[in-house]
Amino acid sequence: MIFSEDTQRLLAQANAIYPGSIILRASGDNTGIINNEQVQTEMLGSRMVLEVTDMTAPDYIATHELLHMVLSLNGFPQVFFQLETEDEALTEQMIVMGTYLYQPAANIIVYREQAKHGLLTEEVVAAYAKGVLAQLTKEDGTRAESALRFLTLLDAKIFMASVDMETTKYTDSFNDMYPEAWEAAEALFMEMNVAQVQDPATMHHAIMDVFAGFDRQMNAWGLPELNAKEFCTVTPVLSERQMRLKVSQVFEIKHVPYVNRTTKSAAFVGLGKKDKQNSFVLAVPVDATPEFFKGMYDLTVQELFDQLQQPFTLRA
Image 1 (cartoon, rainbow, N blue to C red):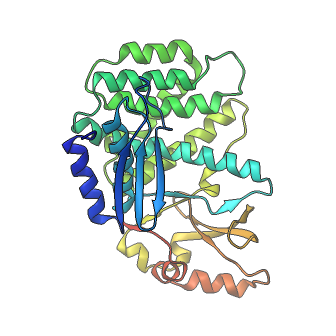
Image 2 (image 1 turned 45 degrees about the horizontal axis):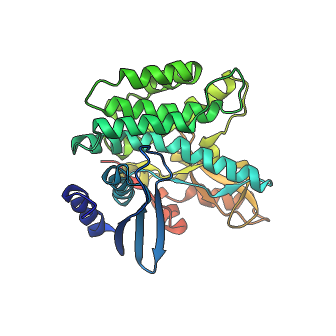
């Protein structure tokens, strides 16, 4: 058997809550490198096939993917892309960046769980570090890859902080090759207070930290901001009390400079009043009057979410 008993148990746990079945496969060579491209997903009817395509660390790769699925199925926040720009290539680039922004926050919990099960071995840590060094070019004073370096190294910082062994030789190599991006990643890592990220609410907060920290760093470097707080929809985490309140008490419905990907019309999003995060996208009729918005605001949050079939998580 290619996968360990621990991996098989996690697969069974995921299958117990997944609406269908998940099948694990493995193929490929041992390259000695770990990266994000080493797993492929294919749907075959109600079956999801996860294929690990590199034999360097099949248990690490498989459990990483399965843990992300388990988090999603247990109500941890997800990121959705329901908006687009008029430039298809720009939209795709923004979606890629939005995904990159989400991953470090989710990986706080994923890496921690993998460490608990002894999966972050010395060999895995070395292969992960090789993957980072293979993906990124050395800083050369230009800004062409600054955003990619920043986000990749933020994830690397979270990974290395999860490891129960000395990692200085790896982090020193990151600092030598990418001093500016590594310093920025370390600063954002400190703001995220990763030890507190334990549940959907604290993970949601970590996502907000990354969104805000990314735009702040891009601005400091004179690069375009992503404005993920408006472009990316993140599963809201609300209390039972908030679900009973009127929409007007919890959210602001705002017109944003994008297009609704479903209706291809003007985009309106529900921004949380406290965190200003896009929590849902509203399909608004072209001829909508002020009364339409008043009707939305007068609904309870529960009523609106029922209408929209909007995913949400109740805060514990």
